[in-house]
Length: 166
Image (cartoon, rainbow, N blue to C red; front, side, top):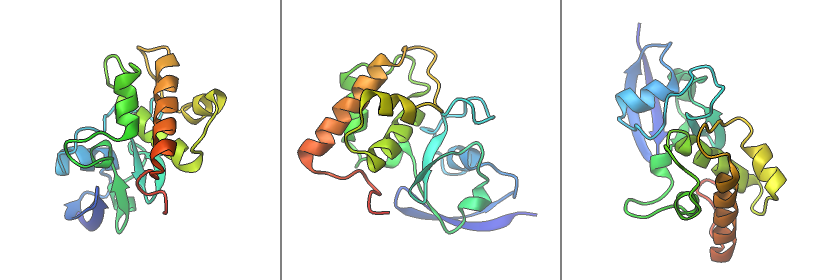
């Protein structure tokens, strides 16, 4: 038996009928065609599926879509207006924080949570903030540099990350 849900995703309200067992990651990808959120391990080990749910980073492979009912989700697609890059996205580009790109959306969303809570993190704090995300390509150093770059850009522009007031 399907359940009706209403979820605001990237600022747009969606009303859908979903199976109660549908994972949020599959709802985002399959029902809403937001494929920036990646399915990695399906066991919450890799972090490729991180999104913001009601202002907090969650691994969307461990959350049911029905749990997001009446909630607000921000995905990688919702970080910045179309045609522009969020400072985190720019940082990953400028500081070569990606190689294959598979982990990148989850890394960026986890970094987003980190910078929302700590706008001036140390290298150790960045590494701690990304502990639940696995990258098999980069060795993490450029990811750390990308987050440092974004933190500096956000401080310079005095721009709070989206959802910082939540």
